[in-house]
Length: 271
Ligand code: KIV
Image (cartoon, rainbow, N blue to C red; front, side):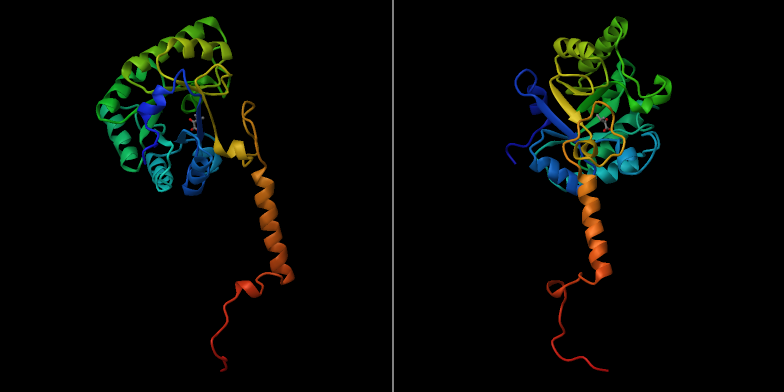
């Protein structure tokens, strides 16, 4: 596909087009996101919470991410497929990081994302050297929720904003093609966006970024407690619940199946 979005193309969008990204975790959500024309699909480890019903992203395994990345890849989207590296798949060593990234690339990830700053520059460099583009993730990094003390906004103080910028610069230097900024102050996101050569893709970090990303289920209204920064554009929960209620009603009333849903025998059947 000639207009396929690659990591290189996405990176070059900085300063020209606003980047639109959304998460997707399976074949239908990837198809829907791609038909809607997004630039990037993140197979986020948020799937642990929104799809698997977990309380945090911490228990999500590399196997989970491989399975869901493969399902998204089968949708063959025009959008770039970015696969999240789950907690425990890159922290221990460079070789662990590279082999986890390779597993996600074999499943169909066209890039990987990992959470963390300058302390993971060596992981970023090694994965990029192995031929796999890397997206960074700074600010609120949910895999570090216990160290951060909760899902709180980040970089609201000048010193924190400066440290965020140093991390962004270190990641850019190590070779990331873009950086997700999650739940940081608009001013800090603006600083990083202006001072870093790669695009910033923001979630809950204000308006002055190179792009935005949201969780698919928050956008369509399939989560009961979306974060304060998410915007719901539809009420898919009510729509889907209404459909199942109508089906249940028709089964109980004997209205479904009706004539068009049955197959007739070709001859009279008798015992
Ligand atoms: O897992 C995820 O959905 C993410 C986004 C919040 C950026 O990392």
